[in-house]
Image (cartoon, rainbow, N blue to C red; front, side, top):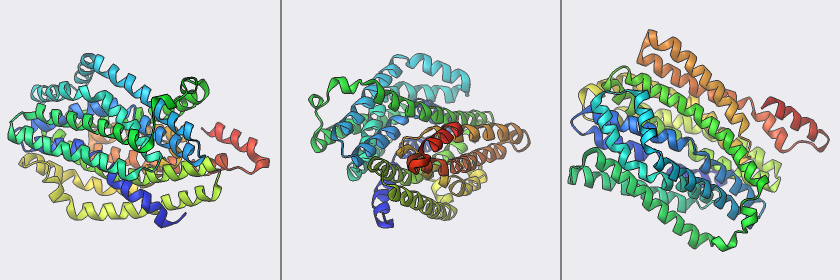
Length: 449
C-alpha cells in the first residue's frame, strides 16, 4: 500500500463525492439571485427536510460500500451481488413510503420550524415538487455505494458529474429562461436525480453483468447476513439522527434570528458541505481499502490504510483552510447579490476557517470504521459530540447570538473527531487480534462499545 495507490482511489472519489453538496449549493445560488431573501430561506427549510429524510438513510450508501468491498476482498461474486440487492430493496420501499407520507412530513416539519409566511410558501413549492424523487435518491445511494465498493470510481464520478451538470443547466433554463421560480429549481433537481438513477442502473447492468436471475432468492432474504446489514445500518442511522439533530437545531436557531441571518447561515452551511464532502472522498478511499483488508485478512494493509488516512486528512485540512482563507469572499458572492445577506455572511464566515482542522480526522476515520463494518464506535462518538453541541448552544447563544451558534457547531465538529480517535486502538485489536488474546480483545471492545 502506497501513497500513489491511496490517492489513485481518493482523488477521483473526491471529485465524485464533492458533487453531492453541489445540488443544494446550486439551488441556493440560483434562488439567491432572485429579488427576495425568502427564496433562499425557503430552499434552506425545504432542503433541511430532504436532508433529514435522506441522511437518515445515508447508511444505504456507506454500508453498501463497506460490505461490497469486503466481498470484493474475499473474491465472493455472489456476496457482491447480494450486497447490492438487499439494500436496493430497502431503498425502494423507504422511498415509496416517503411519497405516501409527504403531507404529514411537510406539516410536521413546517410546524416545528415555524418560518415567516413568505419563507413557508417558497419552501412548500420546493418540497411538493422534489419529494417525487425520494425512491430514486435512495436507490442512487445504493448504486453509488456498490460502485465505490467495487472500485468503479470513474463510473461513479461521471454519474455524479452528470447529475450536477444537468441540474445546473436545468436550473438556468427553468428559472432564467422560463421564469418558473423556486418550483423550477426543485424540478431541475428532481429530473437530474431520476436521470442519474436510470444511468447508474444501466451502468451496473452493462459493466457488472448483474441480472435478477443470478440472485438466489433464499440467500437474498437469509436472516443472518440481513440482520448483520441492519445492525450496521442501525448504528449508522443513529449516527445520522445525531447529525440531523445538530443541523436542524442549527437551522431552527438561525431562523429565530430572522430571514437574513437564516439566509447567511444557509450559504455558509453550503460551503461547509463542500468541504465536508471533500474529506468524504478520502473517507471513501479509506473505507474501500479497509474493507479489502478485512475481507482478505491483511493486517499490514489495514495498518497502512489507517496511516495514509491520517496523513492525508491532515494535508487536506491545510489545503482547504488555505483555499477558503483566500477565496471566501468571491465564493460567498457566487450565492447571492443581496447586500444585507452578504454583510451577514461575511461577518460569520471566519468560523469556517476552523472547520477543516477540527473535522478532518473524524470525517476520514469514519471511512475506516464503516469499511470494517464496525459502526458502534461511530454511533457512540457522535452521540457524545451531540451532547457537547447542545451544551454549548444552550450556554453560548444567549450571550453571543449567532456567533454562539457557530461556536457550538465547530465544537461539535472537533468533539466527533476526538471521540472517534479514542476507539482506533480497540478497532485494530478487534479486527486483527493475536490468536491467544482473541476472545479477551473481542470482549473488551464489546464492553467499550
